[in-house]
Image (cartoon, rainbow, N blue to C red; front, side, top):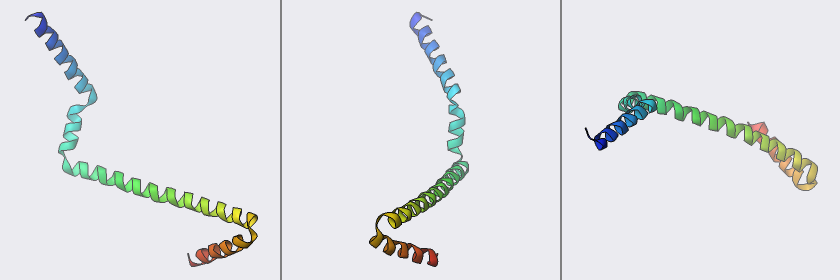
Length: 93
């Protein structure tokens, strides 16, 4: 082997070592299993949806409570109307 072939062989070995560290073979096996890929993505999407719904509910409730308190204290005319609207919405829920 001449010097260039040796250098090329060393680079190839380094690349193979890096690919093994990255877990490329495991990732390829993961992608080849359609059922496993489907279920993992389904569960990830389900978790994202539940998290989004819970987060929106908590933030929406906090915003509504803050606005209600702010409006009752700040604007007497409009605040009574909005407070009545909030009471109506709460009564129907």
